[in-house]
Length: 486
Image (cartoon, rainbow, N blue to C red; front, top):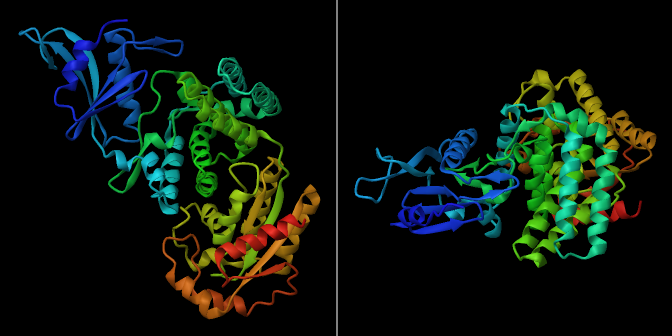
């Protein structure tokens, strides 16, 4: 390959640091970063000539401006100066090309935020909303989804054979991936029409907190096979990354928020496969880099995700302010399969049916008995679809009417899955204090709604009662003990 030593030396002048991978070098200057593509050629990538590197720089600029226009400035030529040296954008012959970016703090990359314990639920919700909006706007690139995944799975098998992992674990993962692809072949093929030009490398290291907002950067520009994919497969990299780091609560949050905001729930049955495939890729890449011990943990995650899981239905009811959503979020990551139970919240679903984001306040007209009946009917419809896809479901709603509680139990009976009903309650002064403190929540309820709810005739409530004033961890443990009994 061409020698880039002169270009590297030129870009290194005055650089405060550099970051290197097998395909690029980023030179970090004050306020600016220059990304040089290495003169390399692989089966999936060809940067071997200056002309090709220019084309890929231009593609990277255009594609990343979809999500991070604040960071991506321009493509610059490195040209031969009259003195014989190098300069930017001169009249002489172009020797190479770089992508100029705005420099950002390493500490603000989500990978660093995770290591520092700085991730939060509001931040992950904002990130997920950004991803959902990005996917919705992304260019459609229809492909055969089943053929695409078969190719990835077989490529993974070839790479795992050379990785030095435990043969029994490799065989387990390969077999489970192949079975899953064939089991979901019809679904993957049907979803092929919705394949889009996504990010392709959507892990925490390619997300940055910029001026208080999460931005996706460094998407795949060099391979349609890697970038033109199912949106859920794109999301799966982030979910896998969170699971691998032990951030299961955030993985469940992202999973549920995405399905609340994007019309992709029909692909839920393939989510385990997508997550496992992402983990396998990471495993053999690390092995190829001489980091096999770390790679083993990713392969183990893939095996765990692919193992059979029995779905169940949990309903969490109670008046406004009783902490139903907090409890549901705490229990969701505990219910397999990964990344956790599908949480269906009546407050969020009502907003969806009204065509507004979850945190948008609705008028009183959205809370008629007829509208509430529609919300509960849709809760059960979506619950049935998620259970059919192999996922446990948590229904988060007031369930103040006997017929609502009976309908939830009847759904579980009809589908042959275990059902548990949990009822939360606490003194009104506790509930009112919580309602008054709410900010940026999907619920519109206040103290006046609570007072009206107390006047309703609920009938006998046979669900397991939990003290909503007790510590949240104790509530979660009580639910898990109840689930373990049946």
